[in-house]
Image 1 (tube, rainbow, N blue to C red):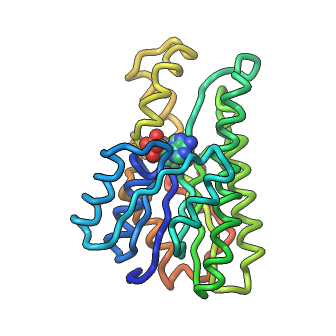
Image 2: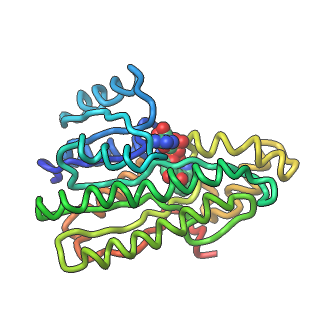
Amino acid sequence: SLAGKTAVITGSNSGIGLGIAYELARAGADVVLNSFTDSEEDHALAAKLAAETGVTARYIQADMSRGDQCRRLIEDAGSCDILVNNAGIQHVAPIPDFPAEKWDAIIAINMSSAFHTTAAALPKMRAAGWGRVINIASAHGLTASPYKAAYIAAKHGVVGLTKTTALETAQEPITANAICPGYVLTTIVEKQIPDTMKEYDMSREEVIEKVMLTRQPSKEFATVEQMGGTATFLCSDAAAQITGTTISVDGGWTAL
Ligand code: NAD
């Protein structure tokens, strides 16, 4: 059981982050939800999760594009035994047309945020004598596709950061691993369907079948519950010697 542990999940007011928060809470961990907004709905999500699972849940606003706010999130959380770096955005465009400000935002939110939160969290894990760093990379942290230059660079970077974090904590009861999801039907995927339709001159159904799931041999989207189950496994004693590696949850994508 993860009772007594606190999990901080960045970018967790929707999608995979929220799914992971639910599974960690079902395993007994108290959770801190986060995004850059600070709405009533955000705080209500935490209250709902707490009511449904019986753990303590809080929502803390912090913008993961800002290093100082990443670090402040971990400080405001108090304890941070489990850090899940999940916040991420996407933009789809060929490199010559790729807006520089999108490049900068994706590198900041999808990659640099994990550096800042990890830097703030490791001293807390060391003080607690136990820790888990779980970075949500992607199949695109291991392979590439056209038109996603910033995302793919950032996710490959996250895999590299994961390995370094593991080596720096190798002789301590702390592990660092990356989960590499294939396609999961969340808003980040919904939002890239129109641009991909434009790039490839395809219908929505064709994009899903011929672009997205063509890379996923199972021909099924992975689910947020499966990501949560994998994160919960990485927090278990069985996973204590699993560190510095990636776990693909991608329906066979990276076997191709
Ligand atoms: P999502 O859009 O539902 O979730 C992204 C989350 O990040 C949201 O909660 C959003 O509020 C948050 N976020 C965005 N900008 C932020 C900022 N500046 N500060 C704080 N939070 C911010 O999409 P998702 O699919 O749940 O994505 C979660 C993670 O999983 C991302 O890192 C994504 O790259 C990764 N991933 C997703 C898929 C997929 O197919 N959905 C596949 C591989 C990897």
